Structures are given as C-alpha cells and as structure tokens.
Length: 242
Image (cartoon, rainbow, N blue to C red; front, side, top):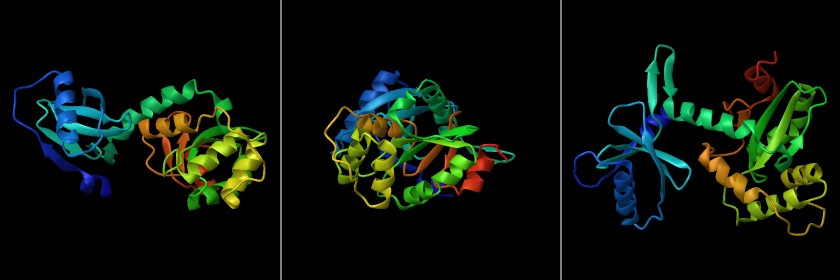
C-alpha cells in the first residue's frame, strides 16, 4: 500500500528524556532547518499511539514524532481493524473538515447549484487538471442528480503560478460560473477582469491544512473525502442518494 511504503524515518535528532511539546517543536524545527528546509511546526498533539505525537508542519503537512523528539516519521498512520486498515490521519482530518464546512461562507465558492438539491459537495479544483475538467464536463449530470457543487481554489503549482492567477480572474469575474467553465475548457476567460479581493490564497492554504494533496479533491459536507474524480453515478452512491 502506497501510504505504508511512504512512511519513512526522516531524522534521528539527539536522544533525550521525554520533553514538553514546545521543546519537541523547537527540536524538530532546528533539525529540519539545518537541512535548508523552511519548516515551521504549527502544532504538536498526542496521537492514538502511546509515545507518539502528531506534528503539523507549515499549517498543513502531518507527520509523527517520538515524545523525546528523537524520531520523525512521515506518512499516514493506520489502525488495523477487522474490516481492513483505517487511516487514523484521515479520520482526524475528517473532524476538522466537518467543523470547517459547517460554517464556511459558501458565497466565497463558485457554486453550481442543483435545482432539486439533495446533497452538496466541496470540490478543490485547478483549471489545468485533466480530471478537474472531466468532472466539470459532467456538472450538469451532477446537478440533475441533486448534487450542488461548491468549487474552491487549489492551484497545484501555487497561488503565484499561472493557474493561480487564472483562478483569481475566475473569482474576480462578474459571471463566475461562465469564467470557471471557460478556464477549464480553454485555459482562459473571455471577461476582462480587474484585480479584486479574492479567497484564492486562503482556500489554497485551507486545502493544505485539511489534507488536499491533489485535484480534484471532493468532500461531503460531513468532512468525508469521497475521492478525487468520481463519475456521477459513483458520487451519487457515495452520497447515499441511490
């Protein structure tokens, strides 16, 4: 399993007795910065495993560290249940997403609303992503199935990249739906837009914090990640609409 294989001991810092989370934070930052990486430890919390701490880097990436800060492990943490491995990492993120989505200002999304709405999904998207285009080509089918799609910006190359700038144009457009469609189909928009306050950078940062690693990233409003690209019939089943 890819997630298991990616788990890797990154650093053996120095041995020491168990330390407070602040000391662990400082030790990890100092060690990783010594490699030239601009790392900021934004949270250190207990994990379900005794002696193992969950560490958040740069507000998004999650790793695990021994309590004394001597070892740092990258990758997902799985609990082996009778039904199969369950990602403890994603289960924790699911709760965070549920809180975020419960009071999210949907006016900050580009929304394609179903006339007879039965469910909503939050979709982090990038206009240069092939599967994002494919999902958008099926937006009418999703709407017809009662699924409202709320798009959030996640330019994979970063906010300052060409896709990031294109997404800012989409959010600054008077007709955001038309601009979103054009950005995916042609890589540009026909409307002449002016720079405006927009949520692209904020949504990009949010995506990193709640576990978005690629696009499209499709989430139910209860925080579950339904997948990347899903055909309409699969998304309908995943949302329990069949």
